[in-house]
Length: 89
Image 1 (cartoon, rainbow, N blue to C red):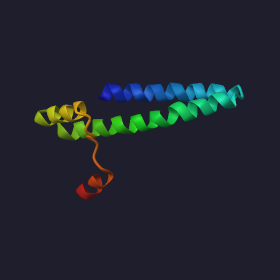
Image 2 (cartoon, one colour):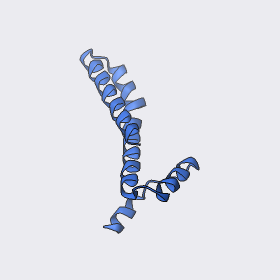
Image 3 (cartoon, helix red, strand yellow):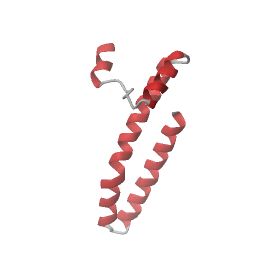
Image 4 (cartoon, rainbow, N blue to C red):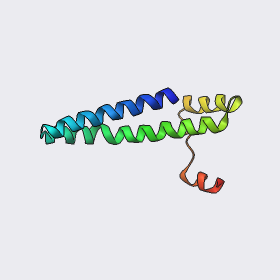
């Protein structure tokens, strides 16, 4: 998961670089295309994978990791609800 997070961040940086090149070339259509089709989704993906990495670090090793994997395989959302973090604090 940490590798996946690194790859998501790298992809985001490359998209930002491409966006900067389009801006320098005054290509409004390309900047809109990148913003509308890629950047928002990329930020959401980084957030989700970051939540997964955080959860896995808190869990440590063992049965919890297996359970986490099973939930991912079954399509369940393993990320905590926004209120769950507030309740634990």
